[in-house]
Length: 152
Image 1: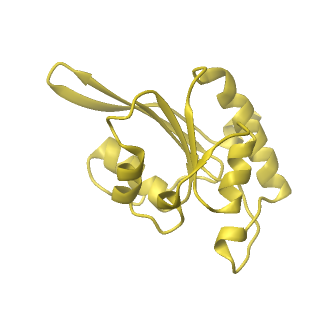
Image 2 (image 1 turned 90 degrees about the vertical axis):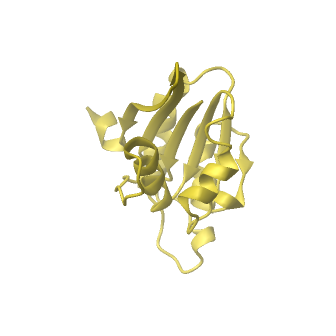
Image 3 (image 1 turned 135 degrees about the vertical axis):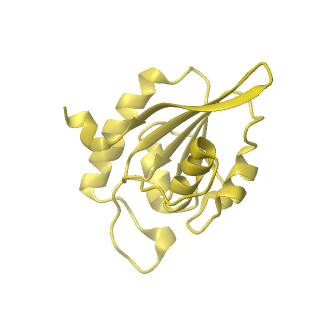
């Protein structure tokens, strides 16, 4: 299973957290990251998003169709997200557009074996790959890309 954790791009401030929309800068971040991702993804992948408007807007730059999962909403735990994703047994590539702090917790748990608060920049992608080598299960970081790295 390839798991791509994509933090939503920059969003407006607001009191209704699920209704917050991307800023112009956030739209540019999402557009550029989607353009970088698109040629690297397999022809068939699953795109999962939270109920938050900013997540759905971020994902829309990659594909018109996505599946909304409330388990990916702000405030979710790493365990809730892993359960909703079917980690690590789900087949194929899964792109998940979501939120801090659970994206950082999840990346730390999968890569370092314990939940820590890793900071993930807005609009950034962490591409993780699960594989089994003989008796050993491995999670490796394929790539970590931030919107500012695309400026180079």
